[in-house]
Length: 202
Image (cartoon, rainbow, N blue to C red; front, side, top):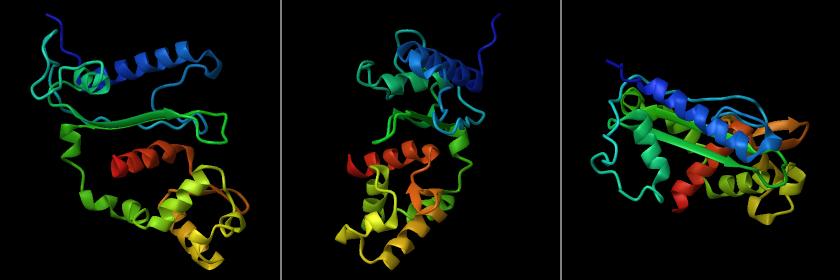
């Protein structure tokens, strides 16, 4: 009797398949594991133990939309983690002004989500909880990199106010000093940032 693959084994298999597909679609970029940042080479994919077998072939799990063309990522998640499921976010994009794409994936099974203390997110989310900071992040993401350049936009206030916001964002990990006086969104934070903006706008 064949043993049922664990959620971790199914997730690893899915990541390998995605990497193979990416490599086939973009020969110039070479093979990368799903979750790898093209700029940093870092990876994060942290499934926790848990999950059950997937739904029988041809049957959708309870509550799962049947439209596999529209909900392809959702069906893939359930196929990988089973009906207990989990939550994941992933993305692959080339930021403005960059020629290096960034790919990222993070996910936890439902059991793993039960171990999270929601309050741990407060510092990271609080740093984004100001419209000017989000506008600054967008400007930096789009290529404006110095406080002097940002200061030409009256939306951002004085140089002192800009430094205050930039340092708060850097302290929470949303910005890094790429070289003296030049700021950027770290490659490992591009997809998380865009995911949060997508959540807040759609």
